[in-house]
Length: 264
Image (tube, rainbow, N blue to C red; front, side, top):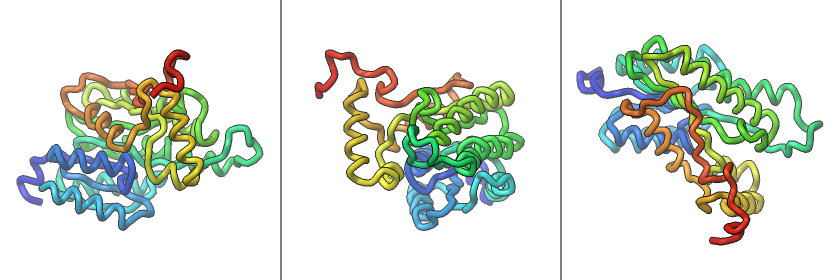
């Protein structure tokens, strides 16, 4: 471990092979962070994110693991400490869902809740616990949640409830880890990208995307980069916020006034 590596800030990002996690990894690398890119299944995508980070002049490594396993979470923290000797920020971006209409109650089983809660809620708790002991003053954690946890509607009941739990975890951890570590959450609405497209199928994805844009005050759907930019802002040491649930949905939750509906 070089002196330069030791002096550079360090970020751990879960679920960083694609989407918001990948976009955040590259943005933080551009800000001079050494980055641990966690992934579960997409090794090739994770290695590409690592290469993108390396091209920005920082150090980066990919580490496989399912954050629902506490052993994995502790290993991620230990790998960062062994490589760089510090952990400055954590972004809990790993996520899972089912695409089951909420009206289809019989199509969701207890095992679905357990699997999704393990990744979306228990994983962020375990990761926060694992890194907190290594973070110094001015540490920061951002959880990537969803407006689904506030609105009570989304891709499935297990997903909606898991994000509501993550929102409560954010507030509880902010109280617990203050004053040294700030904890906030970003709550996106729909995000453009592979995850939604694969879950919905191409035709339904385009239909839902247009419906979301038409219902939003700003008339557009967020990209992973939009959300990553908000994550990075919350991680900045000058951001005097903790325990906050920051909605980044283009005004979807506010809705468009009747006079604006249908206008472009």
